[in-house]
Length: 181
Image (cartoon, rainbow, N blue to C red; front, side):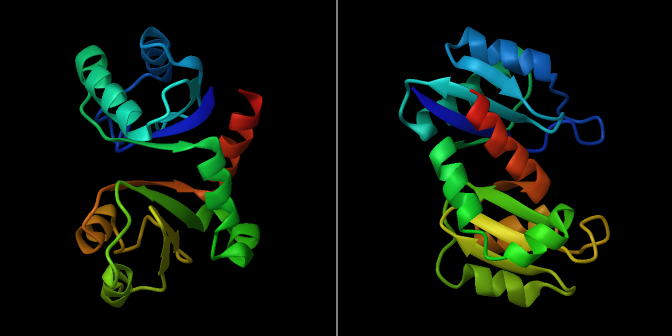
């Protein structure tokens, strides 16, 4: 069995797309996912499965959450091995140590096209910096995300793909949680 991390997009934000983590664990168990565990209230699920296709798991979880939880949202799934590779590929190691709450990893549906990251960086009006590797974008928000003009909508528009972000602290907690499954 493979251990996976599933990230839900835009749940439990300002009262919208409410998802109870207990209900999410129950849904995962009901569809045959093993040892489902959640982290925080922002839609992070760790589980084991014999299904080897992340795309199949994404579709299954998206369909079942719409039916069972009445929530239509995207799921972004990475294996535990992929997650560890994402951590190792971080282009901002100094920021990860110094200010992990202002470094985010955005899991993307598709890898951005060549030139898209440069176009996104050119559109930034603040001090944020974006780098991408494969289906992940690494973003530093030195002045915080709350005041930043670099929004998910702008990122998705410029990269021509959907995504969901987690700060570096959460990225590391999810990696640790995969060790316990």
